[in-house]
Length: 160
Image (tube, rainbow, N blue to C red; front, top):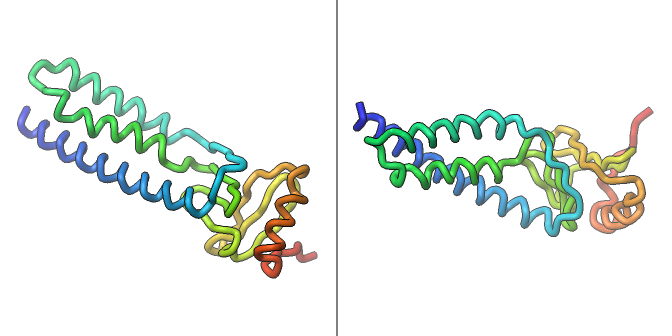
């Protein structure tokens, strides 16, 4: 039983390290697309609240079992924490100097399909779906100027 548990935890550790590397690479790509951060909304932390207790329970199980060596699995457990921190959360959005990120998708201003400033949001059409990024009304004139300089032809107007 112990050998099976070792193999299972080792495989899970390797998978989490690989997943963290992939999520980290995606986060770097998003940062390059969006540019320097100007405004950020964190979104829901439900995923973190589900998996963090599971990870901690696993860590404590390994720690208190005298026949298991935690050193083998510590990198995988650390990877779980890093992955949870790097994951875009549901409803998260970022406005940067060069573009926007909503959830797992990011677009530079130059590659946006359509956009419009309404209320307290910049609304962006990404992959056929309208997404909202919080931008206070006071910041609209400066943002509109940047957007019009880069992609004025893609501004969308409400249809009445």
